[in-house]
Length: 229
Image (tube, rainbow, N blue to C red; front, side):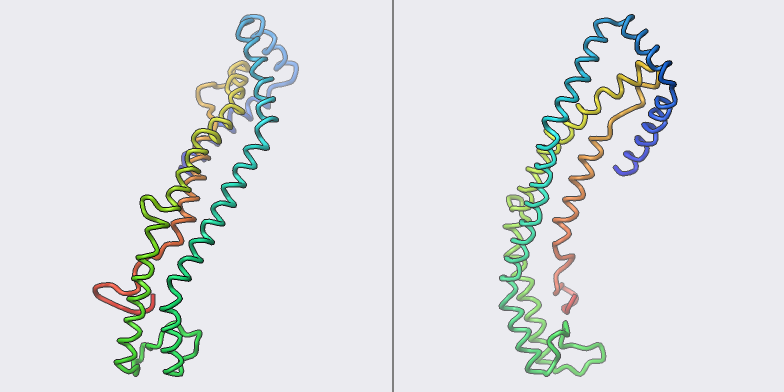
């Protein structure tokens, strides 16, 4: 998506640079000739210019407020998720802290087991049991947040709906006069395209990356290994 946007922006810039290179007098002449040759389209064009300006002034603050609201909702959602996860982990963490204290292992150490060995078998078994308990706590906590009907997919759905029905159409309307203006000036109309769709998709995928980036990559204990990871 980023590559597609970059390609389109390069095309757009070439057309925009060509447009900007037209001398003011030549630009006015071309516009006058087009309006005289296309009176009905010219009237619609001028009405469109006015409508776009009014639309921008009326709705841009609303669009900015909506994006800020979604940003705040995302931050609060992830905070609630982390608070719930910390509460689910609390018994396991307390149990682990007691084990480290019993073995005189510094509290900041992530594990009582060392690569050089020497940890009593009972302590290894106890720590592995703690890892499995933490995995179980995570598995129990996860569905209400990341399951099909969880809070995070539900929030993403509302964000996607806003991007699809409001953000992208609004930006397309604001940019709608550009293609016609370039056509009037005899710059390539077919190849200039607004990038609002790219922007909307990128915003959505970035949000997906942020919220799903909080999930664990893998369990602490698997079928073949068990340890701190």
